Length: 112
Length: 115
Image (cartoon, rainbow over all chains, first blue to last red; front, side, top):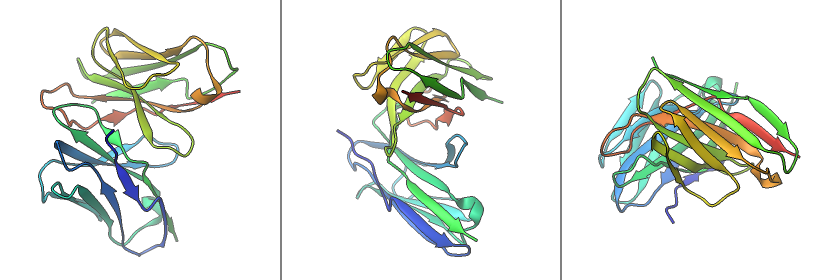
């Protein structure tokens, strides 16, 4: 059974704080690692997809890194804003398949 | 541009009643289609996926079934709902491309409460 784990489960930060969360995934048979942002009452929105060891992706104040050899990815948010409040999901794709295995997410709450 | 629709948005059903949730995609052809469920306190669980009309793969044994009668239509059904079927159901699509790992795009979801 493939397991994708995310930590922490939830995080409360003040506006302006920088923060990061972790996604752990199987290091064997890796194909792609995805990050999604899921705001309340909306659909999950794709942030990044990473395929190569050492990949770094950036979108505004949000960035992500990937280590496929040890099976982890970090998501960083610089200078958190209240609109960053959401659940951040990572999803692992192993082998040549279109199936994604999701972690349980990190719930981020940014207080103004 | 591509859009994905789901309905209904919310549903309250008694135990033992049937279920039909519909998902349609616009602006793309021959997509991969997926049904996910998020139960309370749990992550997104893949229920079914389809790579073409009439082709359905079931990921977990359960009380639900799926059908794809048209290229851009995906239906989730049950003959008799259980309490444990309560949850948030999301439909998603991705480009059908050899190799896999494609980004999936989600619909607005259906919140189902079985009483």
